[in-house]
Amino acid sequence: MTKAHALRLVQLRAAISTGETRQLREAARLSISEMAAACGVDQSTLWRWEQGKRLPRGEHAIAYADVLDTLRNQVANNTEDRETA
Image (cartoon, rainbow, N blue to C red; front, side):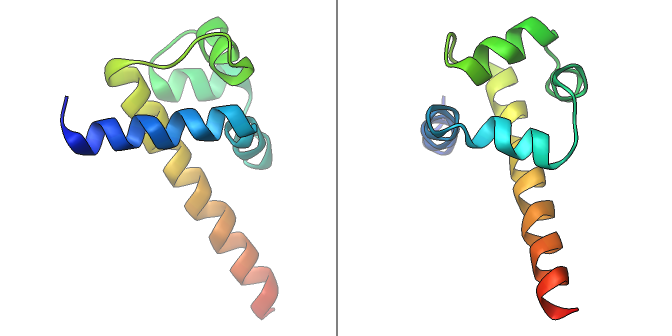
């Protein structure tokens, strides 16, 4: 595992512990099933991640972090659009 991947995992796990992951998914109006499919896992796995019952690992964790980064950017862009309107 590279240093960059390790840092992403730390950030991802912090987002899980604060509930940010679920908030981002809900803000994007994605179901657990849709988010799970985007990460390449089944919905029960994603649910356990969001609940903090399991920690994401390996390539699926990186995929989850990538999806969450995209959602963060979308939320930020939507907020900026509303502020400038």
